[in-house]
Amino acid sequence: MNLLTYIMHLAGTGAATYYISTQIRDSKTRPNVLAGLQLSEASSVPFLSLLSERAAKEGNTWLAEKLAKHALDETKHSRIFAHALKQMNKQAVEDQPHLEAESTSKQKPSPFFLAYFDGYTLEELKPTVINWDVFLGSTYILELDSSKDYKTMAKVLPENELSTRNLKKGLLSIAEDEASHAAYLYEGMMQRMSINQVQKLVDDWRIRKVNSIFRMATSVFQNDNNARSISQDIEIIKNT
Image (cartoon, rainbow, N blue to C red; front, side):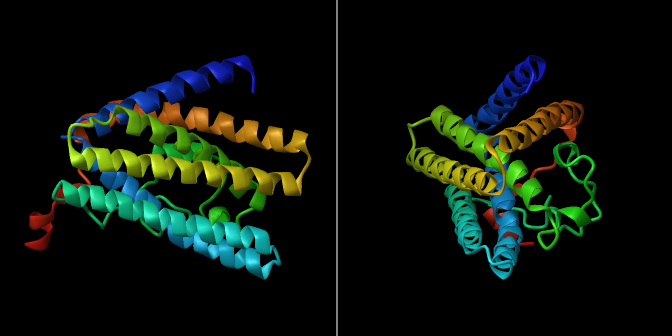
């Protein structure tokens, strides 16, 4: 990674972390953040489960077990966010399009997704065919950064209410899981290639992440006033 990319990484990551931290600290915008996180974590479970099955069929028992544990962790994370929403008498809107490789939604993927996987088709990113190096490198960066983001989110939450104190504990627990995921993904890369090749792969996906953040930020600023809520009061959902 060159100096300019590194500076852009620091700036972009800092801006993204600041934005989501302000959103989760504010009780008015917190439900939408939690709903988005819940749906994101839940949507990754089928993808990881299929990858685990594929790894087992290919004879890579170690990776199959790691992926299966990863899927279980994502399920647990989704439940943590669902519980936090319930404490606020809220619930995620379940009909949101999931931005995953297996998605059949006709809705356009997010600017972040498009930029991060620029050059790859949705067909190439399906768990049954995705190149293992692509999966390991791209997911390593996301998990590593997520572990730091969850710690930051936990830090900014107020501690004057039981619900936010519990959410803080939940976020810190998720951060530990994400760091563990990043560790096995890195080990997986090391099993497949030399240290120099791993570093190049990591740098390539870091650059993609930097570009993705800036593209996403542009989209957010342009569409901020038109953002759709993805959380609703539980009573509203029950009565519809």
